[in-house]
Length: 501
Image 1: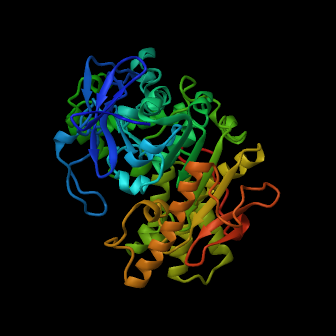
Image 2: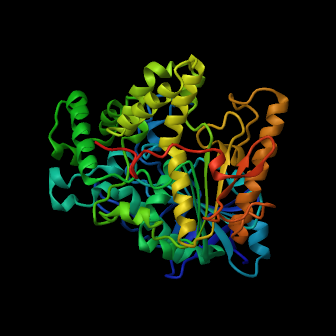
Image 3: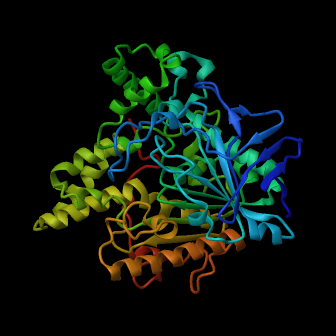
């Protein structure tokens, strides 16, 4: 596709006549901050329109989130001016050389960022990291987060807010509709959209896979460290909102739910900061089986293998929640506290699993106990659900490739860190030889993602789509190999929704 250039900058004309002006950066045509929708607080997104030519040369605002404290890795504190409730924007990156040479539309990689449904933005990957110069378009979106994206308010504020528990999900759908409708104007193929997500991004995809409309919007998915487990019942969602009001009383002096409608968004984030100050902070928010956006019988759809019928890559990491052990936490003592915070009432299952382990291993060392608690937390937060989703997709005839990153430390979303990041100064990888191995494994993982985006198959020798009768997965390690799924077994005692109150 030959791009229209005005004053050296790319210009796109949509099918409805609207125009967008971007910029050329490092070999990419870039369109930043495209407003795919507009939204009123606690209401569904509406399509966004503009007159004339829209300037898309600067990033849009990030979703409101707790930004006035360092992240767990000690990153910089963000500036408040970066955030706004007016955050429903997306970025489109097009490799210029590939676009100019293409005779047909390029495949599209549509990225839903992670961050516990409470932080993150569409600025987390550069086009260089996401595309590596390959012939596909990269789209990254913002969506509403935290209390503004997932507060179930019907029981507190009435039917006008019946769908408020899934605003983030509705935002994601609206962004996908925008891309499906308009990506051809950017040189993309609307019938070759791969949706990528890690952690909460993968859980968001797992939720979207329950919705029949998603099947018409995306042809492929890549889920890393997340599946369908984030969907919660109305009862749990209602209790979570009421718990948020307890923090609001503490921080803002009122527990009147109507105050949520008018409270300054930055003050609301101070309430959220208090609300997430616990070991289970990553499970405070999530989609709701409300019967409007997400089917109230979501569990039956999950058990049936979801409504999605495309191709999938589904993966996790061997030691997802190894952070606690790495930081020297005594998990024999703290494991139950962490489990109850992460899983709600399902914490009792974790307690029983550890009791069963101790009964079978009465002489276990402190290190072995820590390892088993790491397994409990890793499996029940992530690995179990990855395995279940892959098996169910395969059982209903979908093409699905399952994988696992086992390269040390094999922590949460390590597969995508390896594939998309420069790990030169990553604190978890020490020494030139370990760095060399990490980059080598990361290149292989990225290559499998790239091949899948471009062809619908990871194209790794010996790694076939999952056979329900003999399930095998790729294990990425110092020596990567295909292994039987049962060789790295997961605990299986948890229900389909990880968080219950």
